[in-house]
Length: 142
Image (cartoon, rainbow, N blue to C red; front, side):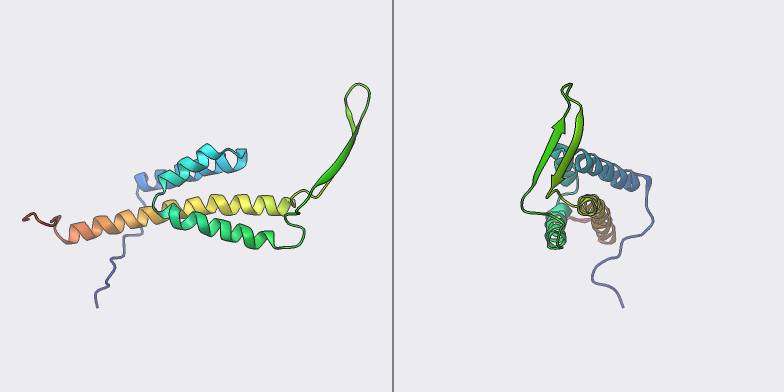
């Protein structure tokens, strides 16, 4: 029985591996440095897959934010310094939990990695489908 959707080969090529790794590194730099430009570049590189993957990240972020203590709604703190400006005591309450920050950053990086892998699979499926039809395009004889 022939499948309706062609299954692309699972063997990675150097080009596809470099694409996935470079997209992951670009996204990681943006996430870790809290810079929007690398994240936007990673989103652009993974279009149209990022259109589906990015909302999924925000859905997971929202679910994790519901865990008590993960993402407080308010923050306060105080600090005491010497006359020379060195900090003696610093207390902050209401900051995001460290596990929440690390987990959401990891999920965001994984989301862009998944989008890149999805793009590789989609492009391979399109290539395989084009090869199966003999490279014929609509309106052109082959």
